[in-house]
Length: 200
Image (cartoon, rainbow, N blue to C red; front, side, top):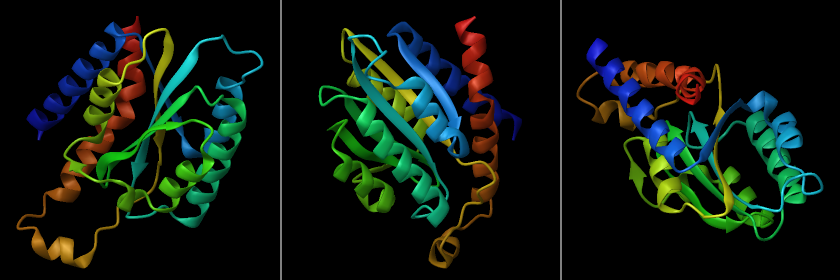
């Protein structure tokens, strides 16, 4: 168990340090504070002339978001599209319950694509991966835009319990899956503090 925690933390540290080398900003916000975060961080009138390359890393706990979370995400993205330009790029990567790229480099003002991903997060992912956080930073590094503000914004869903389908539970031979998720979620909760340490 300790070994798994250490491996996860080392992996997160190495990924975050690679992001620092390429000047990728990392932000972490809970869904309850997402709209406030958008207001405070994105404003075309006061922002620099640099374009934005934003990768949203959204925590998942089921195949779809519940009604409340879905409404918050939709409102936040609607607001965001009014505060960015068509030159800006948005991508969406999911982590936790399922991991993958749900939206690959869309025009930041394309609200239809953004809302579709929120309504159908799992079906938007074409290829599922083992680690959504690592995937997000790998994707960001591979799609780094020079002379642009490159950032990863982690949207956390605290107090949401993963829901597994009965068929998925029947197919697993061990009962360690929920425990491993708990370890990963614990490590994820520490991510903002780890990133602050790395920046210092």
